[in-house]
Length: 84
Image (cartoon, rainbow, N blue to C red):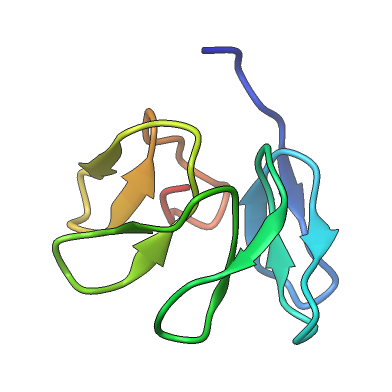
């Protein structure tokens, strides 16, 4: 997997890769079309359900980051300490 750049969004949150705006105004990143997950959130690619009940986009397996959150693919740490 290639290393993706971490970018800060206008609202101060961080995202890995190139941000794209979903129909509800949130940002998603990743390959594939923007898709609505069963819980109403938007993801890039095919929605995958994480063990905590949240939905993540396609592009890799869902994994637990060191802080207990779930990410797709390898966990990358953002400057604010969150994992992407």
